[in-house]
Amino acid sequence: MKNFDGIIFDIDGTLTATHDLIFATFNHISEKYFNKKMSKEEILSMFGPTEDVILKDWMKDKYEDARETYYSFYQSQHNSMADIFPGLTETINLIKSKSIPLGIYTGKGKDSSFITLKEIDLLHQFDLIITGDDVTEHKPSPEGINLFVNKFNLDRERVLMVGDAHVDVLAARDAGVKIASVLWDSYHINQVLELNPDFIFYNVNDFAEFIKDNI
Image (cartoon, one colour):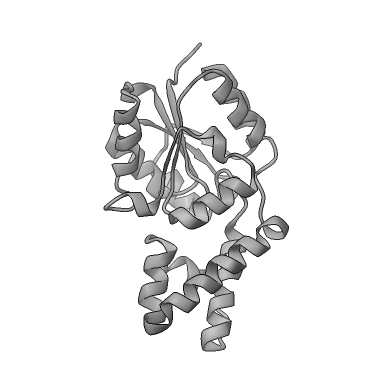
């Protein structure tokens, strides 16, 4: 039974195991400019704005140099430190084969988003990519979901947002679409569960079967 006419994915922790790469990249900056190693908690506390916004606030007059260093490290280490979760390439390809609009809505900036999607060879599969650089308010704002729904003139009841964080649940709820919380690499499990998402998945296989049954 076809229940979804449009599906939107987050990137980090949802499509890709990129958390360690992100932590390493921020620590590369911290160690280079401040001779200091940061904890995961310290890095996570900065999340929300795009990398460029974080770097501008953090690095001040060293921003331009730090920005170049950040993306150079992120790209050079991507192949060895991050990849798509096994099984999701096939799921994305299946959705695409059904001519269902596919979107990305991520808080990442455009540069890092495109690096990651190119590295996992999925950039060409998405019909609309909305990054933190493309919205005026980052998640939990539903702005990116609304842009996707409006572009493809979709019924909100038949749109699915797929993400690993509580902000994905809040954005989906505010936009009036369904939310599939995927918790195979989430740092927000308790916060997500407290929000009672529509669907919860702890492994890719169960999620893949769900998609097969609903498109």
